[in-house]
Amino acid sequence: MDGSNRTTYAPMRSEKDSKSNSPLTRTSSQPGGSPPLSGPLAGETSEFEERRADLEKQKTAQGSAHFNRLGWKRLTIVLIVEAIALGSLSLPAAFATLGMVAGVTCSIGLGLVAIYTSDIVGQVKIKFPEVAHYADAGRLLMGRFGYELVGAMFVLQLTFLVGSHCLTGSIAFGNITNNGACSVVFGVVSAIILLIVAIPPSFAEVAILGYIDFVSILAAIGITIIATGIHAGKIGFENVNWSAWPKENVTFAEAFIAITNIVFAYSFSMCQFSFMDEMHTPRDYVKSIWALGIIEIAIYTLTGALVYAFVGADVKSPSLLSAGATISKIAFGVGLPVIFISGSINTTVVGRYIHGRMYKDSITRFINTTKGWVTWLAVISVITLAAFIIAEVIPFFSDLLSISSSLFVSGFTFYLPAMMWFKLLKKGSWRSRENIVRSIANGTCFVIGIIVLVCGTYASIDDIIMQFKNGTTKGVFSCAPVG
Picture (cartoon, rainbow, N blue to C red):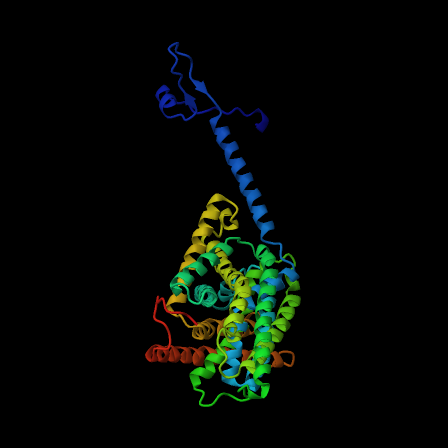
C-alpha cells in the first residue's frame, strides 16, 4: 500500500486516563461546566527548547569570538605582562652572588634557551590545535597521568606566581608608608587588588592593561638605575665593591638560588599554550616569542649588570630597595601597576584552566552568562586566597622565586619542551643527519631542567631552614616588615 494513503490510528485511552494523566488537558473551574481546554503545550515546550538552544548557540558564538581576538602584537604584550615583572627585580642580587661574568652569561644563555624551548611549545600548539593549556600537552606526553601531573604543576606554579606578586605588593606598600601598618594588612590589600584586576577573563582585555604594565616596569627600573648610578658617581665608581667573579665564600645554596632566580625570569613559555589558544592566527607566534625574548634578554642583562655595578655586593632583592629611601618609594609607586597587572594575569590563566575544566562542555565556560560570571568570580577568589596564604607562609622574596623555579619552571621551560620534541615533533631517528643537532640541543635542555629541579629545590629548602634558624626572616603571618 502506498504510504500516502496509510491511515494512522491513535491508541484509545480511558476517560480516567485522559482526565488524570494527560498533561495537555486543563479543566475549567467555571460553574457552567465549560468543556476542558486542550492546548498544544507540547508544541510550546518544543518552541521553548528551540529558543534556549538558539540562545546557547548565540552565547557560544559570542564566547568563541570573544576569546579569539589576539594577534601577534597583542600576544607579545600579554607575554610581556606575564614575564617581565618580578624576574627583573631579583636579577641584580643574583648577579651579586654569581659575579658579573657568570651573571651576564647565565642571563643571555638561559634567555636564548628559553626562546628555543618556547618555539617548541609553539610548534606543538600548531600541530595539535586542541591543546589549550600546558596540561593538555602533558596528556599527549603521558596520557591521563601526564594530564593530571602537569595540570597540578601548572596550577601550583601560577598560584606561586600570584603569591610572589602579593608579597611584592606588601613590600611596596611597606616601603612607601615606612611600614605604617601590619605587613599582613598590606598583604590583604595586595590580594584584593590582584583579585579585582583579574576579573576580566579574556587575554585580549589584559593586553590593553599591558601597555601600562610595560611602561610601569621600564619606568621603575629606569628610576632605579639612574638613582643608583648618580649615587655611584658621587662616591666614585671605583669605590663600588662589585666583582667579575662570584662573591667570597658563596655557598652551594646561595649560588643555585641566584641561578633559579634567573631561570624564573624566563618562565614565559608556561602560559604560551593558553595565550595562543586565543590567537586568530596562531602561526604568528614566532614573531611574538622572538620579540619578547630579545626584549627580556636586554632588560634583564642591563638591569642586573648596571644596578649591581652601581650598588655593589650589598644590592637588595627586589632591586628597587637599593635606590635609597626616597627614590625607592618613588620607584615602588611607579611600579605598582606592574606588580598587580602582571600578577593578576597569572590568576586569569590558572582560573581559565580550572573554570574551563569544570565546564568543558557547557556554555558556562565562556563566562558570558550569570552562572558563568558567578563561578568565574568564585574560582579566581579561591586562587587569590591560596596565593595570599603562600605569600604569608613563605615571606622572603628570593626563596619564594627559587622554590617556584626549581619545582615547576624547570619543567615548563626546559625538560618538558625537550620531551615534546622527542615524542611529538621528531620525525625519524634522533641520530639521523637532519635530527642530530636538535637532538643534542633538546637533550641539553632536558639535562638543564633536571639539574635545576634537583639542585635548586635542595638549595631553596636548605636556605629556608637556615633563615628560620638564624632568625633572619619574619615569622609566618607576622606583622614584621617584609623585604
